[in-house]
Figure 1 (tube, chains in turn blue, orange):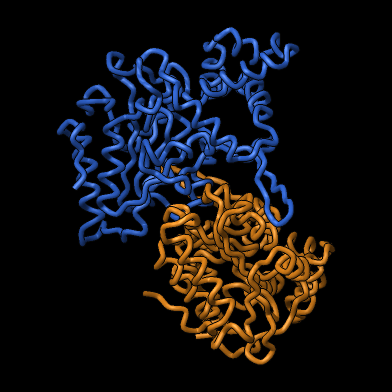
Figure 2 (tube, chains in turn red, yellow; figure 1 turned 30 degrees about the vertical axis):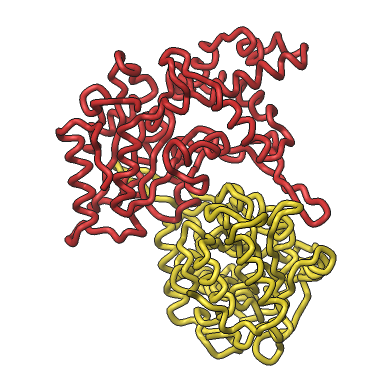
Length: 307
Length: 307
């Protein structure tokens, strides 16, 4: 049986084990196995998102490659920032988004959407795999693939051992996560929900491919997360975990009034082992307090953060 | 072990059993279990679609209810046709769509999209369940729930017994199918892909609901089927089954050139036990001939059609 070995004994761990016991044993809170749906945000919830999203590192490298090939781009943002390695430009665009200012994100999105235009989805997956084969975290000194939070992986296995089905539901790119989620989380591509560009079917001689289009199909964040959960799963989760304002609606969507549900807000409060920040999580943490959601303190609830 | 008892011994049944043997045993065509993805159209492939789509009967009843409540609607199409029981108006709108004329479908879609506006997805599911509890097929004299093709259900079980994962991928409504696919096909809601209206998250006091919006989110037909398969599954199918031109791209998307794949085109050629028609399937049947896809003759390949 999977165990929560990296979780400190205390109220948070007990909230998890008590909840799982209640929904898996006979009684008023029992939930049938097929309805034991758990949803997890990715960036900052299952793996590290600072000093910048891991996907942003991939994008910055791809933007720099494009600027190197097309000299006319080098003076424009975000290509200038990518070539200069000015990561603060990118981090600022994202942080401002969570504070209600989308100006930087729009500049970034325009460039990102054209990066892989007309590429086959399989070729894009190969680029992602190549990135993860060598890329390392800029300050933690480890491969991005080992920037996964060990206690959360233990939680995934613990839930599965109790017949839960776990999904990743991320604002990050669906097709950026899919190539690696099976190996790092044990979650297969069909259970990865995320943002995505449009796709177009290209037929030829009895076969066909899907080509990436330069337009956003889904931005899977905030109120869109519950919509995509229903679209993909067709069930309401009974357990959800997130760490930013973009996860707030997903946690509110988990469970019905008066029915058992567990909502976990991961708090980044460990500057020594990971990072210490609440920017972009203000509303989520207020709601955790107001609605009695469980706050997971990385500093106090996790004996170990990385494997 | 699940058997194909209602399939006549012959080339079609052999094509299925030979294909499954090749991809599940060691050799050049072996496919890992997680990649054994099979996709099935619904209307006309898994259950009866004549004299009109089953979902259309549901919609006609809902339109007539709405016209009864709002007298000003009664003179307009499609409400007039719904109240009059003029099913030919609806059938014609659909048939014309598959022949390239969307004029009737647009009138119908406008009315359909407003039918369940602002309804909670769970309340819509309850309406669907209420419909299926009593509705019967107009000519076959059986419940709609037993208008399922027995040989296809046997095929689903046979594939699952060989570690395939089966999905419904239909032009019909995702949330119309989901309440019943587990009981009639053994396919859970998370493996039902279909057309859908937009949804909106409505938050309140720490909880929230998804409300149906009066706009189309996805029309899951033709070239959109491969897009939605990738969106939902993240893998290319190795087996697909359909019966109309709207399934043509899905069959073309199944398998890569030179790799093992099985594509099944269900041919409605049994006027005695079901229906005999090829209208709306012209391109699919041409491609079956051109590309060597297997044609399933309901008359010759199935010893029994319904349970």
